[in-house]
Picture 1 (spheres, rainbow, N blue to C red):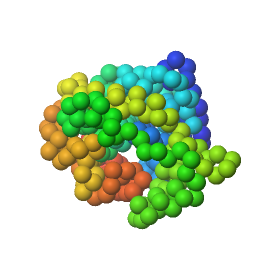
Picture 2: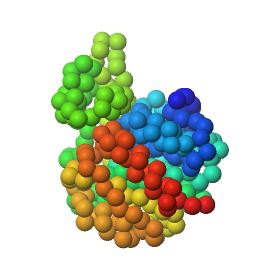
Picture 3: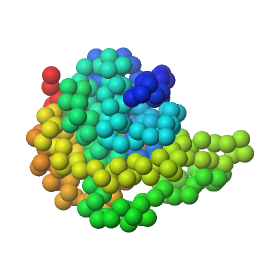
Length: 281
């Protein structure tokens, strides 16, 4: 794995973790809201072992990437990824996004159709928060970020282990990389509350179903079975998304919302088999 700095819209720096080499279809991995590229580490390692060049990017405002005050709308974050694909020199990679990242890669495929060869949506890509929250204030009140700033790093890590006892250690390390650790041992989220709420508002306004007709590449939808669905989006919504896509396939994995951290081998295996079968050109 090598670390690279790539360029997004307006020249901002985007941190990326890259597994280079291999002759398979390149894969760009896109994290969810208030997350970071390291959540993908084990998925990336499995994909690289199968011969795929891989890059996982910290989206703007997250992780080690630059944190401008604006640009958290879907058009801009999708354009960030289109710029990343060009800079990597890739031809029509598969783009995989988890949760909010799933909606982002749907936006990317619809707005920049020549940039991608396939799309994977992991417990996201069908999130339409307005179905659950008719009023923005209700959404903001229910889904605002928890107050984690100032918690000791060791205490937070212990809570994550208790909350996710069957996560591999790499998944817990990935979660902890959502935070900067101060000299006194306490944490603060890399994503500020203001930017978090900008993204949440954009997600509440996003209508992924309106975009499906513009996507002409294969799409794999991977819900976390038994997790209840992100933002209250259950199995009926996922099934409707698969039916609405021109070339959609539905294949769930038992686990929690963060399947990329929880079930990395299963997810990578599913993606590898689907790419070999469904993604052409």
